[in-house]
Length: 227
Ligand code: DGP
Ligand code: NA
Ligand code: NA
Image 1: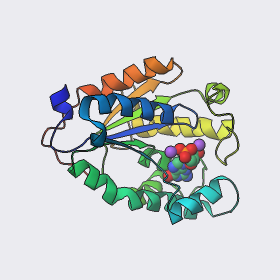
Image 2 (image 1 turned 90 degrees about the horizontal axis):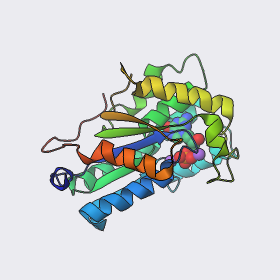
Image 3 (image 1 turned 120 degrees about the vertical axis):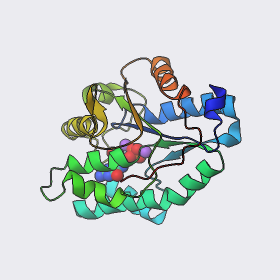
Image 4 (image 1 turned 60 degrees about the vertical axis):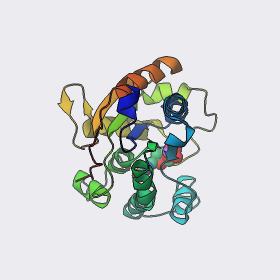
């Protein structure tokens, strides 16, 4: 297993899910496990959106309802924020550093589609992200939005724009359509896709994630792009 994880390039791992599904905690736990195996300089976590850039700050203002933007404009800003990360994603992988992304393209499509703006079709939503690096594995932490709301980890839930149960239920449905649900393949190609029940205990979820990635063979395979 250690050998598989030590391929020529790093692995691109994406964790996805609703607000409060436990992504950030699980990214940290996975980071710790992987660093034990690979070394601290061989693993990195990146939050997406990255709120530290100028575009990220514009996204943050929108999310905390300090600014208003048309749905199309904010959609494109989220995508631009991922494009800003592209070079650092690729250079990490090339340097043999495994990268864990806390959200990525599936969030981009799932959240915008949930707004149900007729002109913002799946094709329209995905278009600006075409050409970005494609993950090796995408882990969907699936949780019922009402259960997520009850989780105590984040007392500030509900403060941001999308943190409303009805909206989250639509996002969840979109994630399932986009990433696949059991036997049904998803509409997006995001590498190996694994859905995990995020209502389980933290350690149980962490175990499931580990099982999903530990035997992944990337070998000599170059990173693909989303098309
Ligand atoms: P987070 O920092 O992980 O809490 O994400 C911020 C919020 O923005 C969260 O409600 C999910 C949502 N979000 C993340 N990425 C995108 C995106 O690309 N498009 C849209 N519309 N929403 C996104
Ligand atoms: Na959030
Ligand atoms: Na995030």
